Image (cartoon, rainbow, N blue to C red; front, side):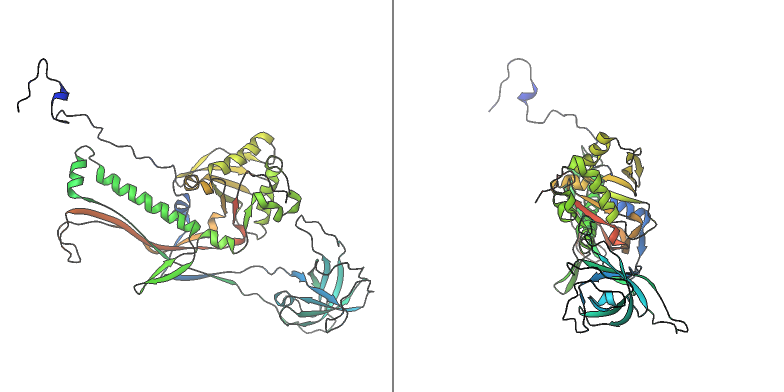
Length: 441
């Protein structure tokens, strides 16, 4: 039926969209600044090619020359506990774990002293020296026979005593003593295969490129960003596991969080009283810098060449630290100007022990659980173990290299395979609830 129009012809009188409209030819792609800083750090500094999907490495630690005492007895059968009040030259029998006893040799001199509480306070403050006469290795009932070099005062409890080697004293004409050495600690990890892709039908792509000429390039870029974010999460959070699917192995690497957890270096500020009871019931505004300093000290007991640590945290974690530094205006801590490092922003907090390089991690911000969390590492001691470098796999039309039939679409992607290794993991840590007050109970 004919439609009659009285007066001027307007756009609404025509079929929808017959009038051309203006479309912006470029679409802004937004993503966080330095969205994968740990991956960028590894790619720039610490990548090593490997030849197997499972790899091992070692860290040799210095012998501590100290340990725990689980009992002091007056008889070699360790049935009669000593209550102290023993004169010099008295022979006593000290029970300790096997690995502790293996450090001690005959003619070593050891000191018996008190084990401090969580706050570092000792009830038994005496240091009593003794000569080692014999060492018997027997698991957790290992026994060290000693002869006191001075009087031993009363002992109220045997469960809070430690020992340390303070030297050795050989008789004239002695032969060389038995030797003690340490084996390096073995670590292992495995590679994880990462893949990412993007695809579009040719019809969809042709339609969209009419108004978005760079549509395919942007699609490729977004897919790569997604893959790098997944790689970043795995470096931090992946759990060591292997399984088989249709006879083919599927591997998950061990991430930094799992490695750190195995050393009990996970600190919850809200429950920090479990680490040090002196902080129980304290407010963050009053003890935040003290807790931060305590954590840095606890994670710096193994000497390394690193004079700073990286702290990857969320926005709320960074704000909680920044408020303390700003409000207290202490000379012990000060911020250096912000720097761009390997494609991400670093704000260095110069402290009395080690400088802390803070990075507000975009992925921590995107997951609410981690906005007050922090990963603390010494960057030079983690490595990316690269088994297969990142490769771009381009899609083809017609018949592909494997002989598959032509598909009316485009598809491309990436593949890489790598794991991570670390040394001095004792100097790494994970922190939760930055800015929280400490529970009283």
